[in-house]
Image (cartoon, rainbow, N blue to C red; front, top):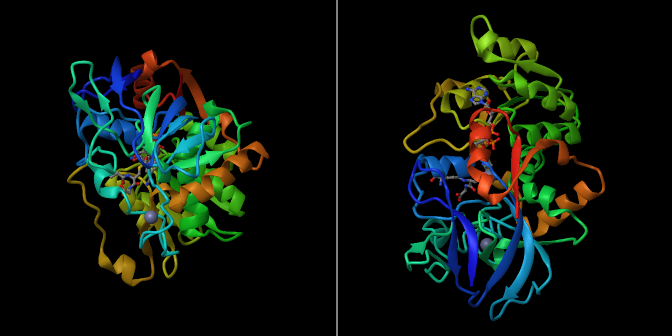
Length: 370
Ligand code: NAD
Ligand code: AHE
Ligand code: ZN
Ligand code: ZN
């Protein structure tokens, strides 16, 4: 079949909207009509050329929701008409990682996924002249139709709106999951969140759910304050307005350092500040942000010797086929909010404007609706 897609033709270039060829699903695969997709900063990270795994041409996008149109041979858990959210972290439920309760990082198809291919080593997308187009994070949601492995699809309830639940495909789950699954924040904790974008606001929402007493937000953009306050931020710090040492300021503000700190910027200097503003003896710092190729983190080992821990999280530690349908229920039951964070709805033709809004700091989440 043919479908319409935004294609990343080369690193650093705007996405090009075009008709592409899409082959039907093979064994263990599912054809999905994408109804809506969010724009995550990780898509921009790859588009820009900062991603060491970036391959071009590719169809980016990993925060989608849609409907099953066709299932390949052997697919048993999904049927035509099911509503689904694609998962860049699949859940095969049988690999060594899925069987270990300490991780959500299913490795069943990680090597082909990282190479922009489906598990059989081929791509279903191509340009009209036959040039193959790579998949991205196993999802490629910047296309009206995509083919995804069965183990990388969460089946969700049919009454949930696509144009908001698509955000559960990455941002919502990553932010809330970092608090609940990875940090396991206790009631009464003090926390600092660096970066109040599409991920950081969901960390704040997760901290409020977990019963944190103090939630400090740190961002250079004061335009984020209103939304962060609405989601539970208790104190705001703009690093450019702090006289003197930022770590000392944050340690003072949190009564000796935070129990938990979260980086949602992807900036390695900020990651260091996050670690060092965690409380001596027990503070945990969780890295969520994705840093460019070649970037490295550093601190004095003494920071760890004296009891701080440095950890990371992917997809908020969530096991997608199990956890994502539950998060959709939380949203539909009013336990979490999504709608105010979706600041812009665009057509696929307007997708590059969505990335402009991200750069200008004007959007939280822009969502493309097909
Ligand atoms: P975003 O662009 O919406 O938000 C980033 C925020 O950080 C912005 O508000 C920006 O003003 C702020 N910021 C930038 N530099 C800063 C600095 N030096 N100090 C303080 N604030 C600063 O991006 P997003 O979609 O929220 O993504 C955030 C990061 O999380 C990205 O690196 C993204 O790739 C990563 N991410 C990781 C995962 C994961 O599973 N680990 C999942 C999704 C996104
Ligand atoms: N390709 C990058 C790594 C990017 C990365 O860390 N991705 C996160 C998800 S970000 C979603 O917005 C992730 O899931 N990581 C685990 C994994 O297996 O990729 C690089 O630096 O090579
Ligand atoms: Zn993402
Ligand atoms: Zn697995």
